[in-house]
Image (tube, rainbow, N blue to C red; front, side, top):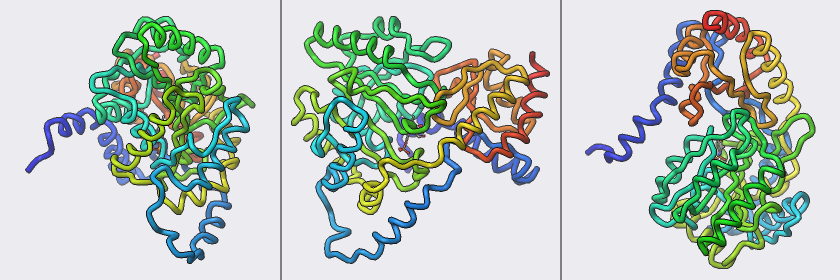
Length: 393
Ligand SMILES: Cc1ncc(COP(=O)(O)O)c(C=O)c1O
């Protein structure tokens, strides 16, 4: 028996992640972990807020019958209501528990929404650079990615998005704050996108949905906030998780929210609940639903990520790197001085610096740095970054 042709091809396509991982293990064994600067993964290094452990300890004592039983596939109504109340604090749209489905992380939420709304061969417009897993998620539901390059500063290229829309377009999938660029889309960009989608939805007589992936919403810097997609466009969904802001990626907990004004709301929400079930998730983990209900306003200390961003930006700038300063998330996406971004990433590896080529994110000529690592790793890596830049400048 062997894996299917499709899965074999997918494994081949995503092999750079494995290569990077293996390279890291090899180098750490050879040079010592403290001498390898691993910026390849977006795995938050900050521990979750202490309240997480306190709440979990309390919940573990709960012996109420059926505590661990099956539940409605959308999740506990108390948790969904708490999420709705939280969303009502920063969206003009007013939510109830009905518009919320608790999901297995943002990844689970994206799959639930895409499965609910996509017909086979329908197109999903994705501004690039973008989170590569989207390609696999779309393929799960027979969707076709239509990647549209953003402007050089990573703002949305609305003209190009408008040109990419066709009768086959069903969804525009955005991610803000963005992985890999750190860009936060402005209210004006969302308004512009909304105008385009409203125009084409009317023209084709079917809604084109806006799906916003927002697991980094709370990780923003310099006092900015992330504008509401719901307030900009009616036919919209947001998916998010507690993976990044509470540092709980292993616990697989998040949610999908549909705009309270979305067309055919009952059918869409019924579809999402069914999809959560038939995708095999059944429901989001019960213990974590009970936990996050109390933590909707909380996050890890974002100022730590901001300090690291500043440390990196100052160091890279003085070493001659060219980049856009991230406004959120914990990634930097500098331009490579060589056209061949993979070659530049290999040159950084020679300095024991592990990053990822931008081509892997649909952003050739760049490389991605994940700075969810301790300050001292950043500090110790900077001379290596400088030496590599001196070689190629
Ligand atoms: C942009 C983006 N979307 C979704 C995910 C998946 O998040 P989760 O772990 O909540 O499924 C990630 C994880 O890195 C991400 O960066």
